[in-house]
Image (cartoon, rainbow, N blue to C red):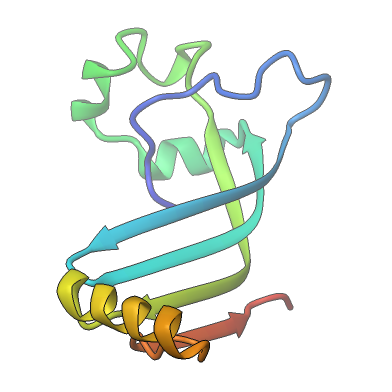
Amino acid sequence: MDRLPRSGRGQGTGGNTLGRTKRQTLQPHRIGSVAGRAAIERDRAKIDALWSDLDKVWFPAGKDDPNLVLIRFEAEEAEFWDTPGPVATGLAYVKAFMTGELPQVGDVGKANLSH
């Protein structure tokens, strides 16, 4: 599990489940999306295993900082879009508008990651 620079999100929800989340990563002409469930954890053994002295920048009270939590993310599905770029995509949309056909604008993929 990766360390996260900030914590406290989702507090006051009456439980430790953050619910369904989605994260998108943008790169030139490539878009990815991962959806799943996130939950807050306060597992001391995991905090000890992941802790670095550099983390004191974000959590001055150290591993005992009350704002320090871990967030477990369980991916359920992922999608990606790889497009040829904005000019070619724009031209494909214009052609689709004129012909009534769906635009062909690159590759699309989907994966079900539920176990």
